[in-house]
Image 1: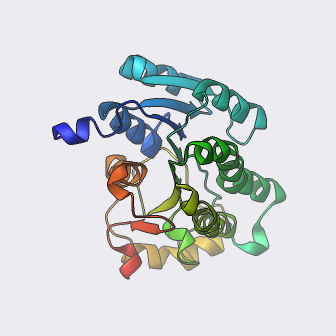
Image 2 (image 1 turned 180 degrees about the vertical axis):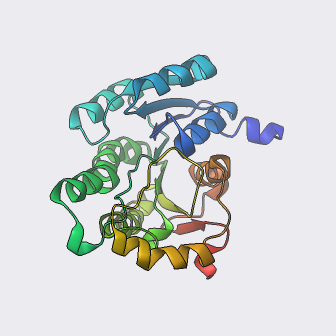
Image 3 (image 1 turned 135 degrees about the vertical axis):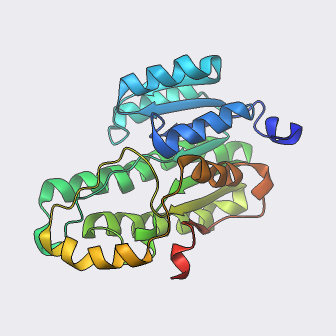
Length: 251
């Protein structure tokens, strides 16, 4: 890592959700290594404790469900008045359930975590970013936001919504100095559980996944893209959905 990269986030405060593992953790580790102070949130308190022990003073943790408005309030209180960046990484899968098989609990939970929490936290930080005329927001979307054959219906819908939310936010606030972009991963080595809960989905998706999905990426590869979009290195980039998927989008 060059000297420039080490100082890229010096003095900046950045919120990262889903920070206890996978892409979120890799993003926090990289941000702290490059000088940021990270407000890290995750639903599993033990993961955050381990992260804080590993990274020390570079991290302030907030444990809780990011879909809970009270947790968002806690995040903002800890973050303070000047927030330089937000990475909405937290997300959950849907068991690959197709539309005819979705139960209300799965639908509501996936939309709450993957879409509504993203909106509410973004809505909360925007006034502070607008006030100072700068900020960068990065949402983690998915290849499922680019196609209909990568997940179940609830997850696919949620990630299409994230893409639309990203582009709308960029349209409205880029002129005020706040950029908003999304990263769309393919398969990534994380601890997110993704079992098939539908025999029809497995029959329909299985053959496609065996022949089209590139090798599984490492979380650090996604963190590199997220931190680039958070940084001033991408100062002329807003409103994109960056496919970081090993070439899956080209298939």
